[in-house]
Amino acid sequence: MDVLYTLTAQTVMVEEEVFNCYGISCEARGKPIRRIDDISCDRQLIEEKVKQFNALGLSEEHFQDAVEDILC
Image: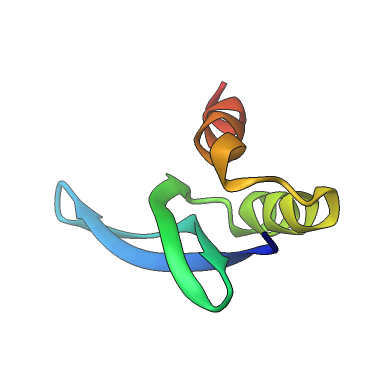
């Protein structure tokens, strides 16, 4: 199954400060499968990971583990 990863963006408030946070959405055949929000406030990092996941053809089964690796 062909899987496509895309960048997601959210605005969050922490202790009355507003931050832009980024996550990753996983889609197959144009339908959302899974979405993990608020991974990092570093947009460039998440954009790079989205490109990497797509280039490697990361399967949805490994999506959660790959995101956890970003956080380590």
